[in-house]
Length: 195
Image 1 (spheres, helix red, strand yellow):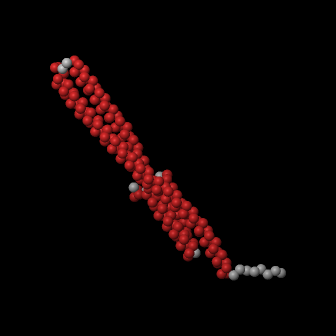
Image 2: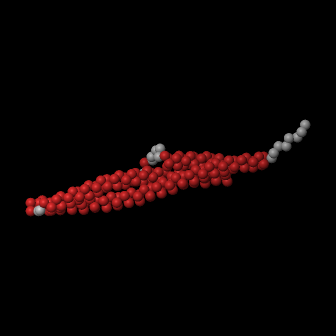
Image 3: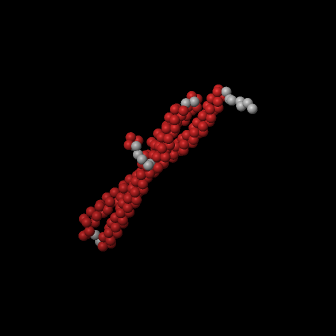
């Protein structure tokens, strides 16, 4: 009968450790990919938040300029109306026609600025809504990044220590980080103290 050579127990332990290490290294690489996706999402949310805020501020400044112009035309119209009421009886018909034409023009300008102001206000509010959505997303990405970094560190420790319990803790941290990342993109739920 042929002899079967049995491996030494030390060799078996080293091969098992190597197999364990390779699997954890692969899972750690997946954690790193998730971390990269989370980082990208967080950076994009921050950029969108800042850009929307800047654009909303520009729109509100434009709104304020329109409001000032509207007020200027309103004051001008009221002054012309007072002059017209005071002098209407002593004015020549051509002057009356000129006053009425000017009053109509000033009233149209005032109405135009009022309408333009409403359009600008709607635009500014839409931009603020985009800012608010991205502001709500940002903390989820931040916490996801932290949890995924912790998961990567714990997975590395589990390789060095050949510790399955430490690896299991890293899995939980990675799952929590992944849930936070997905929520950062989709806002499926809100955690009150994040806002």
